[in-house]
Image 1: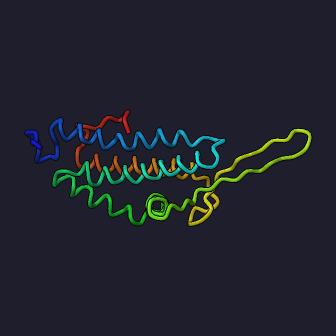
Image 2: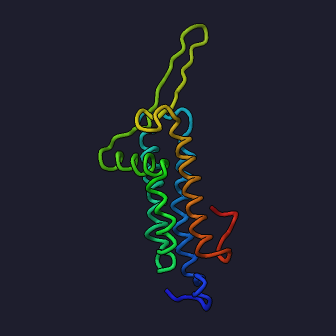
Image 3: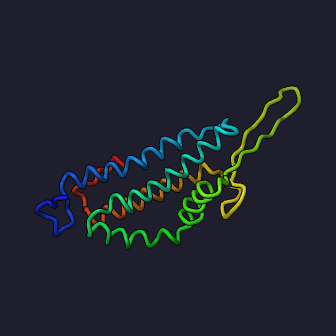
Length: 173
């Protein structure tokens, strides 16, 4: 990959920018998958969508760390930023842990429950909660939202530290 004239400032040619946009695509797909975790999902539809979101959350982290970091300045910037991830609960106790449980053991901690109300106006209510772990009792969809926000902040810190404002598009992730 060819560096631009101002490469000593960490600025790269269009090829580098296009690759970063491809890395962002994973996070955009994650957001789309999150939008499909809607009220009313049950059984396999719920399980498959949660599986998809968790895999995409972790894939977006991998893309930033392994795909976007193709030059030494980017690798160095990533090293300092990503050291934080191993101590942040949303990463270690949700993104990493739940992805590992799903992919390696097919164990889902994001559960669903149904309450049926009997009487003159029978109805049912589906709820979604984490069944186990440090986030037990919380809505997994809210945790996914937090995880997406956290990943965006990690990307932002990484990009600001290395690329300045040259390639930043504030309207895009």
